[in-house]
Length: 148
Image (cartoon, rainbow, N blue to C red):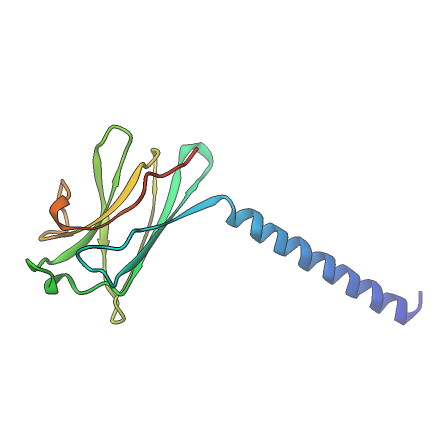
């Protein structure tokens, strides 16, 4: 084989590999669903999303991300923490943890659930380990999740 033929063949192989890689990325991204939180009446400048992906074995991974969220101490009444909650099909809530704001007023929380989530909610709370969400201080509530 000539060097010219080998170079052309290597270039073709790289293009094929890149195409397969891009296709794989689109396929994997299609498996997770992204839900944008509606505009908050408590902190209207804040934006938030939750991404949920069903894994093998009935596990649901999630990632919540918010930005432009005011420090909870600036709310009326002032609060100490932003907490992410999940609601299941029976209407029960689970405290998933605190959203810790960065200096740029952004925060993320990731995790996994062993049951199908129905709603994700972010509330302002006085304590991190609350057992029930303060629904009067709801910052965000997702639409009903459409997961299979």
